[in-house]
Length: 87
Image (cartoon, rainbow, N blue to C red; front, side):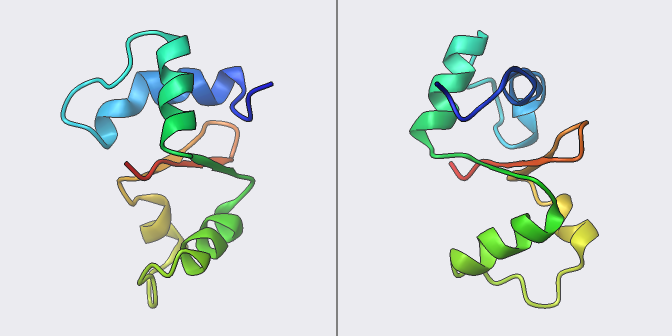
């Protein structure tokens, strides 16, 4: 069972050029495999996104939640969750 549900996979597939100059996946299966390969993370809310970056040692000091949500590797899902893809 994948940690990436259909909404996450379809959103990434439709919006992958936010992070990459060209598509890295053409099908939902390829998108899911790509997300698994780069260990993408799904967060319930922006608080979890902040905690993730702090745990990773990223320099986010002074960044607002809006700036964090707009980072190129952060995909704001329509249902309020966030997908973090670090390639």
